[in-house]
Length: 271
Image (cartoon, rainbow, N blue to C red; front, side, top):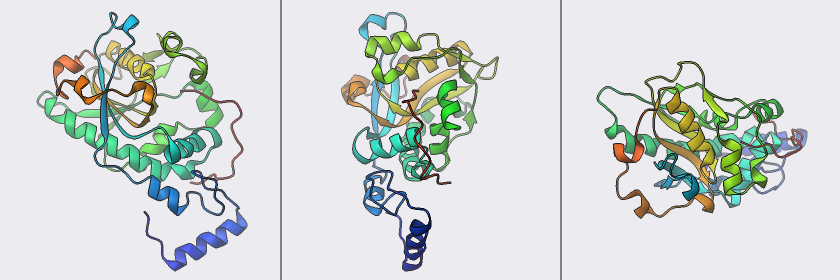
């Protein structure tokens, strides 16, 4: 938990009078993120890791799993605070959440690094926001989280959505895959020859990550794994599914400031 002296506490109390705010994690008054929620957002050790795989009906198209490192389950305070960041413009929640994401990124890099070819450099590639989501928010939440994630590899860019998507929250597993199929493309030759770690905020079915891998590899990149702040039970896998092999080419393959009272963004936006 962040250490705060009496002067810092007094300043925060005074600011709360001028600019009333509720905790992004629990709704308690007078703090952007209260002390109890900050304690609930402390980085775990170690991060979890699972294998994201396509549904059986789609496995024939690309049967390779994508290793995923994640910091927490998408529940409780992390879920509420992340929802506030994404849906209510609560960028004051980005700092403690970003530290959680940093744990997943750091451990993914440490696990993947030894398997890279000699001289290769692993870079992070953020899953892009859809155009409609970016217009509503004015920022990509994952980029906001990474600003507070601590030391990390160089950032690559070069993915974009090429068509509008339906709201993923209302869709089942197969519908999510159909919705995302062919929706992302690599920008020109920007990713050619690069070694990538995909980064997202929440993973549910894994469809978004695998679509981004497809697009990045079509653009000439090699995608080695992924990292996320949180995952839901829908994508949870037992560690035995990794077969004890976190850096094998057989697994990865290759070819490829606070705005606390900002109004809600209206409809649920989806990426």
